[in-house]
Each structure stands twice: as structure tokens, then as C-alpha cells.
Image 1 (cartoon, rainbow, N blue to C red):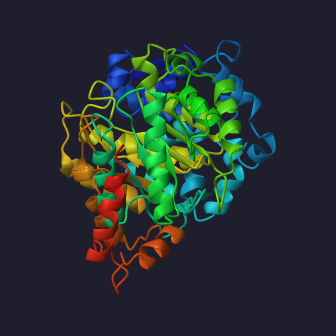
Image 2 (tube, one colour; image 1 turned 120 degrees about the horizontal axis):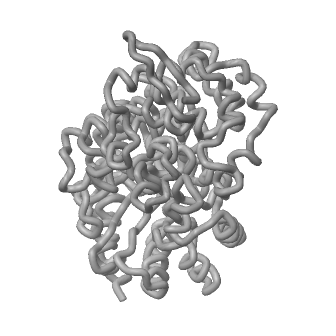
Length: 464
């Protein structure tokens, strides 16, 4: 056994760093499914004692997946900033937690060491944190990105307007877009998950969104969340591509299951950036992640799902994304069983992503066979708002009729903005005011009849 700890007269041993990290994790069904979870609460506590006293430099010397076997490991090692790490190199994992929670560690201080943190260090420190710790640390960190508006500023909450349709019907999508805009959503992105994989259909949807944006001079960005290879084809044919989307994971093998590697992401980033369609910034990548993706692809290498989620963030930050979204409960109860596990994962993902310098949003969601409901989503939404989440989802009625899962609605986003005194992205907020969608008190008015009467026929004409 590489690591040992005596607790209550019992000696607990841990084979290697992978084993230690897995056993120290809070309970979740995915780790149990993989045979990685702690066998008892006592074993979990013992693992956390060992982890707390582990030097951060250990994570530079011992990799959870070998350098030679995995390009994500190579990205992490080759991209490590030794100069940034020097300021915290003397700390243990427990010492890092204490520093992050201290008054000394404000947003600027944390940002200064972000490139010196590896995903495994960040995963390790999160395993020692209570939920309130994850909220307190994340709240200190602001990650600001920009394309046609500026996302992530203090006191702001952006919303992805998600107008999915089960047949990609342009009229149905247009109606959902109008609904979201009238309720103040869409400043993060107007993003469609297409029902099919047709490049032609994706081009039609992109043109629809771009026509709406230009017709009303809306300072936001659009995206059809198709595979990165389709986006490359869309760029080649001159479609109005604002952002390049891709789901990513924390191992080379899991990314191969998505049909991608780092070289392909680099090519797509350069192609999308070359269009220079941004106005206030040029952050062009949109990544989605989720705990359990590597396990579901049988590509986890014996590493717990939360550590692998953090490794996915290393992939994301290599391309300076506009948006990173953990679709936290989407994979199902096999990986996050109930509302409590989804809540914990949401707070972990948000905090860990921000510690690594990413503009984190959350799709606060669950599948219909999970032990969760909308009350759980309300609680998670509120806590993430307190933690300073960059953006959340806006889905009509919180019910995605194409992906068949439950998320958060346009009205949920209004609740969070009003309750916590948050506002949309500044450029988008100014547009809402000019369009007559803000009342005298700065609240969303729901839209004057004049705008609705103009918009509905204009959107309907885009059908076909």
C-alpha cells in the first residue's frame, strides 16, 4: 500500500493516488458502479486525512493516468505553469483549502495561481470541502469572457436560451426564441441542440438565429450544438457560425468516444476564430462536460468521476472558451443518483472549473428516472447563484421536449436575478431597455404588445 492511515484502531491502506482520490470522494452512484467508491464512511474519512496531509507537489510526480498513455495527461503536464505554482508549492492539500478560504486569497490571488493548479490538485482540495466551502471559494472568482456581449461580470447572471424542438422545426424554434427574449434570456447564447445530424439542417437553424439577431440588433451569439466536424463543414460553406461547440471529457479514450482529439479541437478553434464575428471579444468555443462521461464510455482508467471531470476542464482551458457548461444531472442516476448527489456535483464542478480559470455555467437538470424533482433544482439554482455562476439554462417550461429531461426555465432565471439582485450582461441589458423589455424598475416587463406584434410575424416568415 502506497498510503496508510490508522483510524479507530483500524489501518486503512490505499494503493496509489487514484485509489486515494476515489475513496476520499463524497458518495455518488457512478463511483459505486465503477467499483471505486469508499467501502465505509470510516474508510472515506481515513482517505481524507491522508489527502489533507499530501503535498501538492505529489500531483506533479504521480499522475493518475500515465503521461505516455493519454494526451490529456500530456496537456496537463506540458501546460503546467511552474512560476504560478511556486507561490503555493509549499502547501498540502489541506493547506490549499485553508488558503482558499482565507481573506488573503481573494479573486486576484486565486487567478494568479490558477495556471499552477492541476486538475487533480483541484479535485483533491474539493474533496475536503463542505458545500459552503465550495460556494465561498467560487464566489470569490470572476471569469469574464466576451463575444458580442460580456459574460461573467460581478453582479450579473447570463442565460442560455435553449429553444430545442423534437423535429428541428424552424417555426417551433422561433416561437421558443421569442418566448425567451421577451423574458430576458439569451445573453449567454441562443443555443440549439439539433434533433438530427444534418449539416444542411444545422445551416438552416444558424441562418434563422442570425436573421433574428440581425433583425433586432441583439448583442448576443448563436450556436447549433452539433459535432465539431459538422461545424468545420459549416464554416467551409460560409454559414453564420458564431461559436464552435463540443462535448469533452477528461481522458483521451473518452474524447475518442466523442470522435475528437486535441488536434481536431485546435483546428476547429482556429477555423471559428478566423471568421472574426465577435464585436466586444473573440472567445469562440463552447464546451459541455458532465461527471460520468468517461465511465459511460468505459474510459475512466480506474479514476473517480469527479477527478476526471476536472481533467476535462484542462482540455477546455487550453482553448479560452466563451462558455463551459457542466450538464450536471443529464447522464442519469447511474452516475448521480438523487438530488443530493446532483447538488454536490454541481457545486464541485462550478468551484473546480473556476479555480482552473474557466467561465462556468451549469445546466441544472435531471432525467425523469432520477430521484430528484424541481424543488431540488430550485435549491441548486439558488446556491449556484450565491456562488456566482456565470450562466444557467433557459428552457421553455423547464422541460426540454427534444432531449427529454428537466432543466431550468426562463422564469427560474428571472427568479434568481430578482432574488439576488443580478442583472443580464451589460450589452444585452441595454438592448432589453431599448426594446422596451425592461420596466421603470429595471425588471423584465414581459414585452410590450408592439414588440410582440412585430416580432411574431417576422419570426414566422423565417419558417422555410
